[in-house]
Image (cartoon, rainbow, N blue to C red):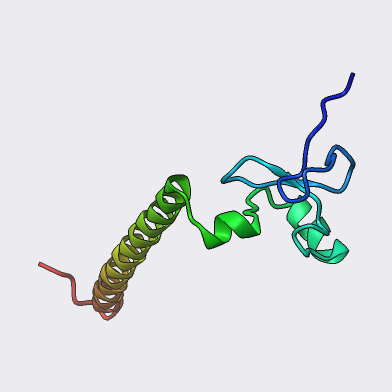
Length: 112
């Protein structure tokens, strides 16, 4: 016998094709119960990170952890971008120095 998935909203059978899983509370939901249009449902169906209305309105500890991790990733990415900017400046300076040396060599002035 196939498993039965009860909807987290209406508690009816959510075993049909049109359902999605809340990543926070791990309950299944009908799109209609969450007031999700068919168009949005098909987009959500391709995105495994869905949170039901209840979990969105009452963040759990895991949701707080998710938020914390996202913030940590954002900060790390910002630091990475800053590092890349510094490297980019260094590369431009090296390139300018190399071009100056090349110009000296082309003009017959050999570096000491």
